[in-house]
Length: 440
Image (cartoon, one colour):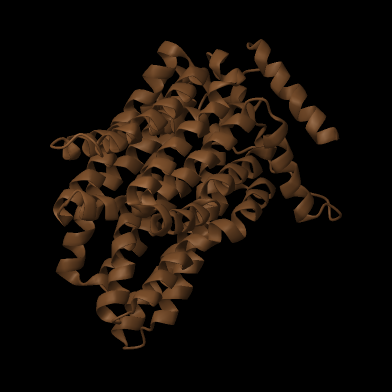
């Protein structure tokens, strides 16, 4: 296996002495902080510089998320057919070039809302490719025993960016205006490309498909592997269910805090910011918890407690005087346990799936989880009108609780370590499952 080619010296020295991983970590960290700038600066450029309408703001938001639905599964095929390091570099350079168009157009007086739509959409396409590629690339840089720790560090950067990034972005936009703040984001993508370019680890050769092998068949192969895999199927069903009902919940969550609980905008910001703090702590706890209770139980526990944590919001309905404390607890606790589950889930997927399939399997997971987001948001909005804010929140919370049952009643409960066909009896069943799937 390719993992066995990683030197024993690197295994002993740890991730922080693994220069290739540190370069990938630095690239992802820089781009995550930059992404927080665009998340704020792009809509502000539309609202302030172009005086966009509410409808145009909605189209702009949709333009950035639509690529997951349209190209998510295709990205997995591309990642499996091409070398991942050049793909990551190309995605970074492409995103930098696209974002550079915004300040240049603003400078010459040619910035239009339609241009922002196109830029947001194309950046979204390249982001889908980048995200699938870097998750698929990681196992070729670190030893199997370090996968959970590596994912914890990557997630810690994401969580830190979510906590600190919006504040920094707001200061930057106020200082140099939104279009020039987007220029800063362009430079962060170039810095990310430079760090990825410094990675020197040999990459497993891709497996280009024969001419007769259609893209549709390659996508179907990845979907079949996930569906027939005794560990992956419950994870993807649970993730998809949690995502759908989570966005049913989120569709009215802010309205509930503002209208029913009387929260000020600052209080709403405090609640959402505390979720980022919980996510950061969850990223730091994911690896130690997996070592103590096992990888599978960490996933099961995280998913189950994620649903249970939402009950604190429900409790706020009937506990006057403690609404703020209960909502703060729910936001912090749910993000903490969700990240614990997600870090271990990603690590398990990377360890259990052969390199030639990892791009398509990763894309299938992302498509299943992100593809239901607009459906959940729409359902939440409709329910809010039909049964009210509290009724919609109840549906979301109990839906998240039900979604955890897919992993609770699965073989994940007994999975102590990452599957390894050389050491784990369970891993042979994983490999056999894949062989049956691929020969079907």
